[in-house]
Image 1 (cartoon, rainbow, N blue to C red):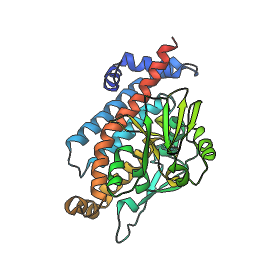
Image 2: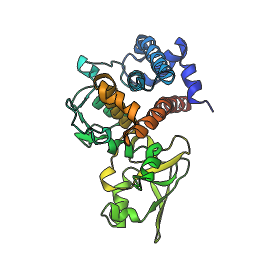
Image 3: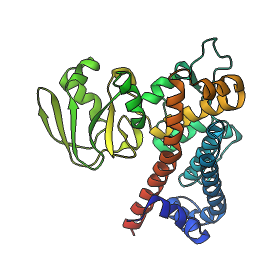
Image 4: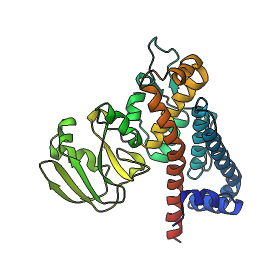
Length: 319
């Protein structure tokens, strides 16, 4: 089976890039012409993204958020070209689509900070066209909430005796187990809880109720590309929000984008606070940010690459 890295290398050839885009555009008007029109841009976006990520890994942590953010932006633009051959349709789409607080409070902490989603721009556009999220389920959101949805960050919260996510199974299994304590956390009966999650699951084959666990067998694997289920990149386990307030059916790619945007803004415009963070390491902000930067540099290229590779695999199976 081809790996994501091999697929990126495969696309690093004009013939392969054009052929892949042609497959993506089949059924659209002027599919072949548009594949030739876009393949060069597509290749440059992938190449620039890779360079941003590679240089970020070699750079001082002080500047990594900017490099990783623009690496992600270029990768998302390439991904958008596979589905939207005329992207960008207007200059308004070139804006970030999200804003950060202009004034920081006296005792500012990153986890308490929040970002605000805009009606137009990159964030709402890719959320709709890549992850079928036309209506963002929040207007503003705190950084702690975003961190709490990332499986790779769960151990940091566990050390503070905070359970943000709970393991419910493996991404390679059709069997899920939900702790029955979730019913209380969500203020729902078992029946209402099942109804709440059913829309985000494949067809349910069997349900077994137990005192401690609710066992669900599915007809197919869970689609973890768009929440509220999140996959750990190392152990392949599926995680589910442990609390009602954290139940957000959004893609993890959207979460990383919002976190990186805000971190890159701090990096560029809040030099005193940002510099002091790496010198004093005074609170929980530093270990969370430090670990997140390591995670996002690996996970986002892997996840978006996996999604494009899945498209390629599907196209090939139909021919």
